[in-house]
Amino acid sequence: MYLIHRTERHPESNNKNKLRMLEEAKARKKKRDATLSPPCPFTPQTYRPSGAVVRVSWNRHQQQNQREREQTRQRLAEEEAQEQQQ
Image 1 (tube, rainbow, N blue to C red):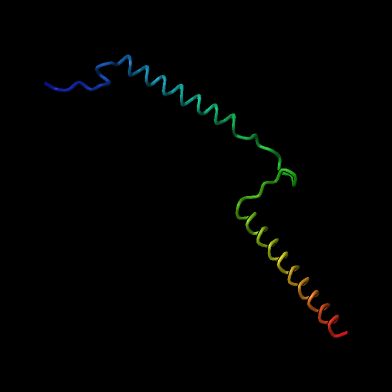
Image 2: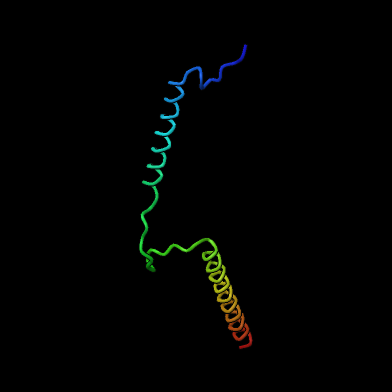
């Protein structure tokens, strides 16, 4: 006595399953294609930089802010020192 493979026992239901799975895959692909954004022309308005570019520019922005803060602190400290001398 030997076991009959499931695919051999019910060939028609197996085909139905295959067809159903193919249909589901097609539906998923169609849905995915619909959700993808259409290609847009490269203009400064539509430019979305990648993560690395954003990190570099953000770091540069933060450094510039820190420099400006330091300069402002020094200027205020100098002004206070001049006021105290008078």
